Amino acid sequence: MQGQTEGQALHHCVGTYIERVAAKKCLIVFVRRVEEPEKPFVTVEVSNGKIVQIRGERNSDPTKEVKKFVDLWSRKVLPMALQTA
Image (cartoon, rainbow, N blue to C red; front, side, top):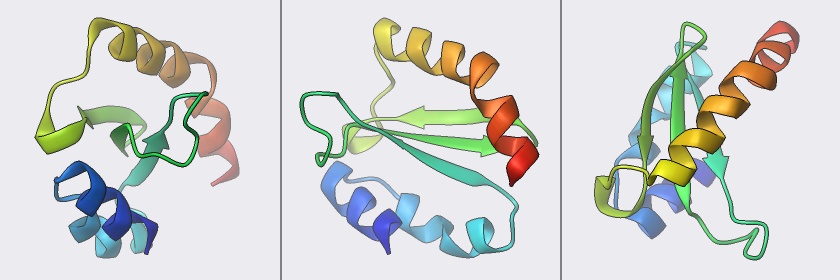
């Protein structure tokens, strides 16, 4: 139930995505800061191999730094992760 914990901490609806994740309709990725690996920071939704949304606390938009990181991750890491899923 990590999604519910994430949603409660960040005050957004990721906890309601459980059925979609279980049905493999989307993938939810939790992004953390290196210095606070246990603290929710940003949540990413991936569907059909593409980033659908990136949300921080209270559905805030990501900063430019976070967007840049997620873009790089989506090009370098995501394709490999989807191959093994």
